[in-house]
Length: 414
Image (cartoon, rainbow, N blue to C red):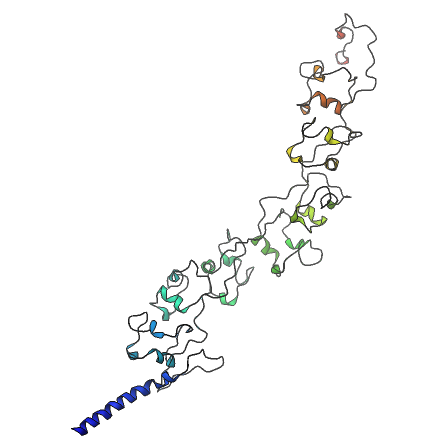
């Protein structure tokens, strides 16, 4: 009886020793680290098959049984029954390089299967079948490098491959091979900062590099971000502004540069957006208006002070567009049309007021031309000058001779 008890104890001790030896290497191993570059990956042997890699990072996830245990996300297989957390990393190594990073923002894209599934944009590998959305972010982390923003409007440019692809305006990088138009906006978002608008007419100016470039003779230097861009790319990103540059509202004189009048300290200060612009740039954007300023309809000698008659409360009010304009500006825009001046009055102007007694509809002389509508007596003598000495006096008495036509027949009726 005692001999049989001793045999039973020896057998039990042998079984316990065998179990301890099967896990001793795991318990005695050091904490797991990623394989170093250049080191061979462990290969399976007949006595020790290669254990599956850990498909996620292990930093901060030292307690494997939180996810890999009974009644959790990934239950242990039956062969692992009784294995403790200390034995896991003795057999399972993290995958080299870690799981692929998520190369797009995940904010607002929490439903991974909306794009990553057999029926969506990107089919999942077979190893990911039956995995759920909550499991995605347990292995895959968002990349610290966000996709480049789309730096132009996508209105009318929804088919990205028209411009971005092999043989197109912008070749794609090799890691984008096989990606479709639908995938573009899934990763790349439109930049909140859009390209500057073209502030001039492009008709007849389709060769943008004639003015915009880095070489000699170009008017506007392009930023370094535009190196390598071609004329064809310009109008794909930059659109014409709906607001055209103001027209030049006066005649352009070949012997006078624009900066003579338009510059800091000159008659018209330029806006801050025009700093650094040269005389050569002016007429590239600004065109001469087909409607020129009205000609001065009177002599200017002795009348250089325009504001005496032209201004608020004066003989001729100025239009609202002239607010803030000074005396020195008047003759730069408005010119006299010599030798065409208002006709002189054929009679003395003294004691001949109001002028409308003779110069109006139904009166002796007749109606004024339509250009004179709204003009007052005060304006008449400012433009029309009386003949010195007036017309010759009537050489006879006028008493009883009120009908001049009895003796003086108009030449046209003879």
